Every structure is written in C-alpha cells, then in structure tokens.
Length: 360
Image 1 (cartoon, rainbow, N blue to C red):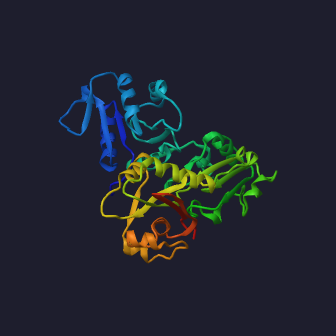
Image 2: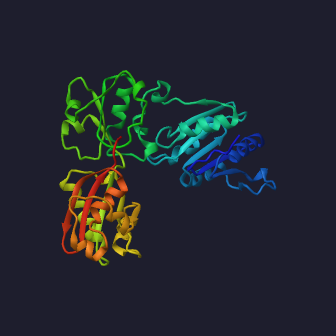
Image 3: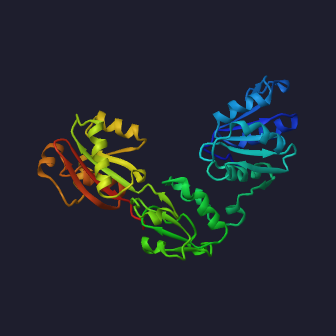
C-alpha cells in the first residue's frame, strides 16, 4: 500500500497498547501525523509523543493545535472530552473515533468542512475497517452544500443559508443552480440529483418553484430576494493585472483594485492571482499587497507581454517598459481567458485590468 499524502495535520491519540499498534499503522500511511499516548506506555519509539498529564487535560492542547484528531477509544469518552472546546463547524478540527479493535472508523465532528468524512474513508482503507458516516448528504448521495468546489479552492460568500439550503437538498426540495464562472466539473452533470435544476439565467432562480439556490459566480449579487434563498460560491476566476511604478504604494494598489472591483460588481474573493511585469527586482508595494491579501503574484517577461494583443496598447508604456501593455497583457497571460475589464488608469502610477478564466 502506498503512502497517502494529505495536507491535514493529524494527531492520533491512543490510550491502550492495542490502540498504540493501530495508531502506528495509521501514522505509517498518513503524512503529517503524530501519535500521542500516555507515558505509562513509554517505549523506545522516538515517533510517539508520550504525555504525563491526564487525557482530559492533554486533549485541549491537541484539539487546538491540529486540523484533525483521531481518537482510539470510546465514542462517549471522546464526546465528553472534546465538548468544552467546541466552537463552530468553520473552525473545529475534524474528529474521528476508532474502537480498540479497529472494526469501525467513525466520522464524529466536522464531517464536511473539517474533512472528517474524507479522512475516515482514507483511514478505513488503511485499517480495512468499516467507515461510519452519518451526514445526510453523504448517506443520501446528494450534493453537500458546504463542500461544493472545495477541491478547487472556492469559498462561500456567507454561511448564513448553508444549513437551510442543505436541508432543502436532503429533503429533495427543488434547488436551482446558476453558474457563470469557475470550474464546471464540480459534479457529474449527467448524474445530478433529481431535485437539482441548472438555470441559464440568474433571474430564473427567483421562480416560486425554486426553493433554494446555488450561485457559482464572481459577480456581486444585489437582489435581496435572491440572497435570502441562495448559497453563493466564489470561484477563483479573476486575474488582476497591475501596471505600476517602482514607488507605487500598497495603499494605492489596494484602493485601485477595490475601486475597479466595486465599479464592475466583482468579488474580491474570486481573485486567483495578481499579475504584472517582471522588472528584474521586486516592487515593495506590490509584494505588500499580495502578502497582506494572501494572493500569489505572477510576473511575466517583457517579451511575453509584448506578444499579447490588447485593446489599449500604449506607446509610452512601450518606451519605458519594453512592452506596450502591462496590466491588460499580464492579466490575459495569467488567465489564458478573456479580458473583462479593460485597464483603468490611476494617474500617475497605477493601471488595473481584469481577465477571467474561461469556463471551457
């Protein structure tokens, strides 16, 4: 069996000798995992973290330090131990419970957003155990509203309607889906649940027939009636091209991008990357903006940008930069899609343009 690679940081807690054996099996196949056990079982194994305090004290530190907990002891005991530390499903780690014979692997907490369901399936494969998953979307083989697009890095605009629309999905009420940006293969479209209808126009979601809605878009939605019944997903579909001077400040860049997004009703949550010209050394204001907003910065050579056809080339820019376009050309180079916002000029030292990744 090959190693399973995961981005999760997992703590595996065992309190019996048999549990330690099970924990080591999991650790050997699961990257980024640590095994914890009481000090009374201390051995020469350097890869086990032995602790002296009671489990009831140790669990709090582990709960707040890892993205996933695998507890090899009784379900009731785990529930009592973690209950003082529970916050909400957006921040709680995944918690999985395994019995002392590894017969069952139980997804206990944060099944969807925390990834407990997915991790339970992985671990049950390692141990040849029976996975126990009880979330309604999974047992009914329907769309999990809070997981849609997770593998693509999509984010939910507002969590307020997630529970309501999830219940509608499970209860097979009619759910409308509208998408105008982002990856299209978020579901096998030929096997959509029978209560899910794809809509060609956003306004179609306002029909009385549609009880709940999923909107996959990088555009700002203003209709209050639509907002009240929808979960809005923000795909990473926008590349923001920036032309600037060496001394352009982070504040100027921030204000310029915000203005362009607002005037074009586009969501900042859908920015995939910032693009610009590689000037040979870093520009402080641009680095600060990208780092402060956790956005990648993609820089292109003069030759690359000068070959891209744009609607608004500039002879002056060509004279000083060696390419007739920076903001428009770099956003197109990054997105490999379509220019949706031609360059905005913010004299004397900033231009901003936006391209969208093609859905094809």
